[in-house]
Amino acid sequence: MRRGKLDGKVAIVTGAASGIGRATAHALAAEAASVVVADLNADGAARVAAEIASAGGRAVAQPTDVADEASVAALVAAAVRAFGGLDVLHNNAAASDPALLSRDLDIVDLDVAVLDRTLAVNLRGPMLGCKHAIPRMLERGGGAIVNTSSAAALVGDPVRTAYGASKAALDSLTRYVATQYGKRGIRCNSIAPGVIATPALAANVPPEQIAVYERSHLTPRLGRPEDIAAAVVFLVSDDAAFITGQTLCVDGGLLAHHPSFAEFSLLARDSR
Image 1 (cartoon, helix red, strand yellow):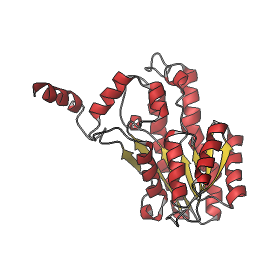
Image 2 (cartoon, helix red, strand yellow):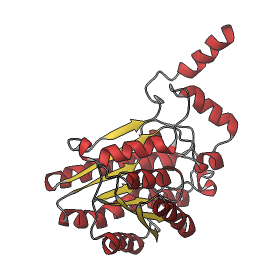
Image 3 (cartoon, one colour):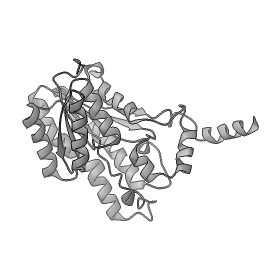
Image 4 (cartoon, one colour):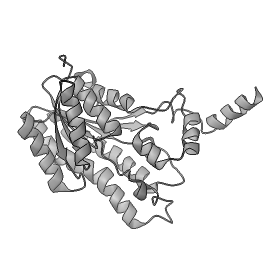
């Protein structure tokens, strides 16, 4: 492994067994950070840690339920025990189980149990991560936190009310953490991805809906996990030393255009 911009840093990535989390764990390790790969899927976390190690990086796996405070506290303790401290936290784990998302409906039909579970993972999880990581970061003079939000936090949608609301709350939490700990050297930002081609997307969205998303992005393709990972590396590095309390849209222009863009594009295509 070459010396990278995160050499000597210790990072935790939650939801790191696949998708954005896996890509971010690899990207942080490629910049010479020591990475704790955290996921509810213990086998998946171990597999990603082994991938990083085989590429010459430093990583350990830690089975973690981000909705459980004792589990999150154990995660932070494991990072300190393995690598001597903590500098970076990527709160990436999200409630993406198809069985849950399929029940995340409009507000009238929304089961309170679905709302509670979504908030437990998407909001309480990052809050617990910040709660237990920040004291360890302060011991090293500061640190950087990145929360994975969503474009759904910034717009409305016919369904997935709980998911969108939880991510909007996460953006607010991001600003509160940045405000409360900025003077003590803690930066906190969130990233709002567009539609990212991950296993969760394939599991939750049928092909005809993915085609709609493709038309609604301004880029020639949907996002890739590596696109978000690159943004995380930037935000936790010294290159972003003056950026905090922000939500960065990494969305292929999904939210940059008039809502009628996709339909007019179809009309233009059909007229040729």
